[in-house]
Image 1 (cartoon, rainbow, N blue to C red):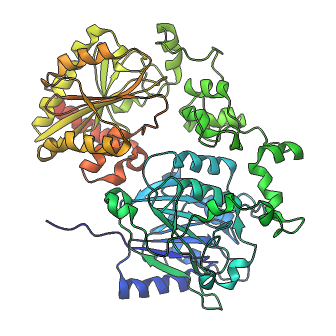
Image 2: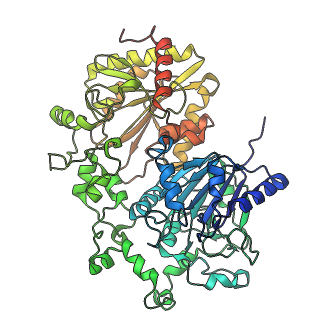
Image 3: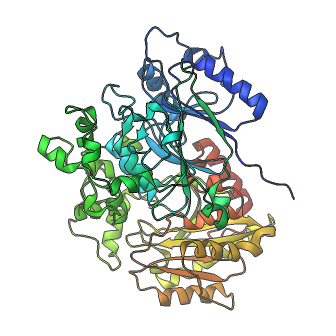
Amino acid sequence: MATISTPRILFCGDVLGHLHQLFKRVQTVNKSSGPFDALFCVGQFFPDSADRPDELSDYLDGRAAVPIPTYFTGDYGVGAARFLSAASKLPSNLGFKTDGVQLCSNLYWLKGSGKFSLHGLSVAYLSGRRSQDAGGYGVYTEDDVDALRALAEEPGIVDMFLTNEWPSGVSNGADTSNTPPGVSDPSGYDPIVSELVAEIKPRYHIAGTKGVYYAREPYCNKEAEHITRFIGLAAVGNKEKQKFIHAISPTPASTMSTAEIRTRPPNTTLSPYIIAEITSPAREATKRPANSDIDTQYWRFDVSKRQKRGGAGGDKLCFKFTSSGSCSRGEKCNYRHDADARDQYLKNVCFDFLNKGKCERGSDCNFNHSLSDDGASFSQNAKSHSDRKSSGKNCWFCLSSPNVESHLVISIGESYYCTLAKGALVQNHVLLVPIEHCPNTLMMPSDTDMELEKYKNALNVYYKNQAKEVVFFEWIFQHSPHANLQAVPIPLSKASNVQRIFNLAAKKLGFEFAVVNPDNDSSEGRKLLRSQFDGKSSLFYVELPEGTILLHLVDDKEKFPVQFGREVLAGLLSVPERADWRNCKLNKDEELQMVEGFKKGFGDYDPAK
């Protein structure tokens, strides 16, 4: 059995426009110690002086080649606005791209903040800096920070966190004999990065901008079993000849055993951010000049200071609370916890519209840009038929909605239709969707189950002719926008492992599945599901290839992964990088080709015919 090689990653500090020197060094390292899978550049990527030659144009125009996939976060400096504005307008870069805006072959700009998967590694980043000197580029926003805090709530371990500036207090509790002199310089530190890294708890935190190489001793994390290693890198070609390039070969946390995750080297210290919490806040304050830029900028993320200074942005919404109904920061959160805004969000109103009064995505946004006419909160019970029709006006799945992507539809029955999944996990991944706007399939009239079973049986036969089985699953939560039962084909060779991998995933999250129908009769199992559903609860169920239905009733306070079913099957199929549907999006021509291919094979079994 072939072994799976671990990814090999390079990091470098501030590039400052020295691209030829950087890539020459990368080629040398790649030949002697490679091959490497990617290079991540932290700190300022563009030149700090207009006197520097424009080396980037050589790569954009094809006169030189970027040797390996290269990602950068420091989107400021001479020429940044010109190059990045042009790249943003390219058709291939439009839309939501957390895995990088491409400037040329092998060169990607990590814009704002986000998280993506690369060779099985979970990578999170915060691009830009706090300073307001960089115009429209190079400054992270409150929304970027809030989005990362929301990502920190998601399950799983982040392997790498990339930032430009260093986290304030990172050397707290470290071995002073291992701390270079430049670390004591108060510039280049950011208290917001400290807060984020303490919440995200990455295995590796890489930063630039201070012009110093510093590999801190690993430190343990609060409420986590794994350690974090911080590495600060110097600038490319620095005169002091400090280290500006660093290589690691990390095993993705998603594939590590519990024992491997818990391993702590002998020199592991306490978290520097825990130490900061128990140290007098005056300690940091005494280090700051009276008119320091740290205090001037920090108000943007502190509600009390914003209000005192009359800041226009002092009433921003907390994304975590608005989207999930809870925020782990509680009263310490710098953003507003507004129950009415959450109700509007649950009614498909755009978060940016609620937060800013406008949405920059415009017509590309699939959410509503006006407040719901019904000011009352959603009822705990099922919505009425008239409410469903109203909610469906901006729904992604209602056939009457202008937002529905009708070119993905494969078959339309009386009560259900079959459609290709957007950002399909695998080829022929489809959804069975009620035609009526309904939050879940268990609230559909019971007589519609007959048609649903016909579609399921037809898919079973269709997939079996391709030597595959099918797994159905549905995630039901309060205020679900529109029901969809997912159907994912898997190879016959993996069918016997589906129950085992779902049980392992459940154990990792601290729960056990209940078996609804021990006799494997899926039709009878669905009746039992209906009898156990009160219309208010949140639940996840999965129907295995043999017909067994596994059920988990989700507690109100439980943090259940929204993409749980997809993530588990992505692991089973050895495609963890496809767990997020946004990494799998195709253009419309490719989607049409897949739909036509599916229709040709499925036509003989289509119950709608």
